[in-house]
Image (tube, rainbow over all chains, first blue to last red; front, top):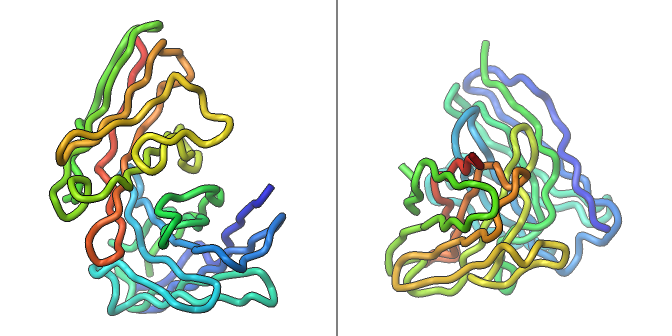
Length: 119
Length: 110
């Protein structure tokens, strides 16, 4: 079955750019929507945005000015970039399949990766 | 502040039924039957339990069911078991092709 795995630095300095990659295995990244979701320590979930394999994307309006989501179909990966980070961006970041038209739910999920913003 | 409102906690004894509410507005829950529910155990990734309001993915127990009335969606768990103790989150499609989560509900099995 499809599995997702997040990867990237666990520590990012304030004002710098957070970059994460989600690798999809067990299935093709094509013909599906793919999302990023985050969860600050001890808090709830926040949808960051989704991307279709073709490259069209939709981002949470509260993060739109700082977020870029891209897809690399040749490597079955999609990526998240969040710039100008602050301590408020410290969270576990999850990637998941879904979020877009005809698939407004998330399944499956990656295990999540903790990113801490600190100098 | 989350766009969808859930109770912070609910509890029930083994074998009982409980319901978790998820209240939104006509911009999300009220106008779309596109609510999903997730179960999250500590330190784990969320797991999809219900999608499109009331549909159960393959492998999810039929003790879990979803419904909606007006601007409020609900997740009902019948025949409570110890392993159901977890955090539960609702999520809804919202106007503008965005998605919004509830603040989460901690379920305690007494």
